[in-house]
Amino acid sequence: MPLKCGIVGLPNVGKSTLFNALTNAGALMANYPFATKDPNVGVIAVPDPRLDELARLVQPQKVVPTSVHIVDIAGLIKGASKGEGLGNQFLSHIREVDAILHVVRCFDDPNITHVEGSVDPVRDVEIIDFELLMKDIETVSRRIEKLRKSAKSGDKTEKQKLQIAQQLLEHLNRGNKAYSFPRTTELATILLKEMSLLTDKKVLYVCNVDENSVTTGNAYTRALQAYIQSQDAEMVILAGEIEAELAALDNADDKRAFLEEMGLSEPGVYQLIRKAYHLLDLLTFFTAGEKEVRAWTVPRGATAYDAAGVIHSDFQRGFIRAEVISYSDFISYGSEHAVRQAGKLRSEGRDYVVQDGDIIHFLFNV
Image 1 (cartoon, rainbow, N blue to C red):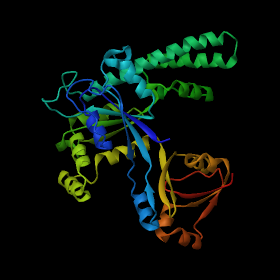
Image 2 (image 1 turned 120 degrees about the vertical axis):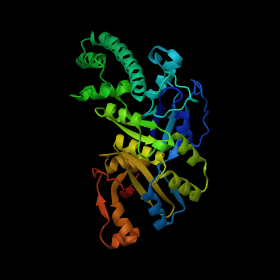
Image 3 (image 1 turned 180 degrees about the horizontal axis):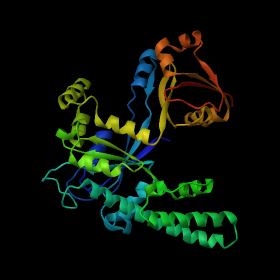
Image 4 (image 1 turned 90 degrees about the horizontal axis):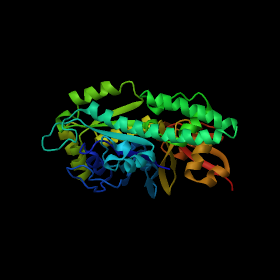
């Protein structure tokens, strides 16, 4: 399944502008709260120069990049955890994503209304974090009530789950996010995964700045950077308006010229996608043949057997072995045949740990 990222933030911080820049999906943009009531969903190709280089050498019939699903979730406000501003509906959409792209307004513009009346990125983040935390406390409290009933049967596992859930609730009530709750046992890991808590998700803070601050940041981005230093999160700075203008250009030369004019080496959304992959500890492997050169995504630490299943269940079920070429060797020798001749192709078993950039051919029999 592709990586699924949800764009969240207060109203009017540039979420839909960013979504449009990422997907060209034409999401409604408006200067009033709740312009986005239902989540827009787009699929974007992950830019990877290695895929382009492999395609140049192999000359396949088709090139298929790996992809990311982007969900534009409506703006949250104070009280969202209690249903304010259709908050319960919006929070349920967040539960379904792998990572949160938290867009934070870091620019001044008197013509764009701020729902809180002023620009303060740290305060804005705290508002969203509080609402997510309150929803998690509600979720865990409900789970505890269910576990209390099931634990009465004397089931040892249910009693252990109840104890873990109670410890987790205490952790959340102290203002801590779920991701920092210690997973000291396998049961604790399983229980948290089952609950899919909002504050257990990885967060990438997206600082939406004016075009003059896109390369250097500003006082707002520095304040936010200092605030999130102790969190399990990352931050990227981009200008939503620049990204929107770039996305509207069809010609590659025009895009390059516009980037040079802005003093940028690449679109900010490229950096955003790379940081999202790093945050979730993902890597890319490739399959390459005359019919297709394709990129695939797996978690870091995935085995050849795991990777085979990403392509097709038959590859995994009938797994025999994986023929592996490192990306650097493929580029150096120029073709699979030349790599074989040089003795650089490796035959690996199901427990081989996939490395970023591996080109893999799976042998299977079903």
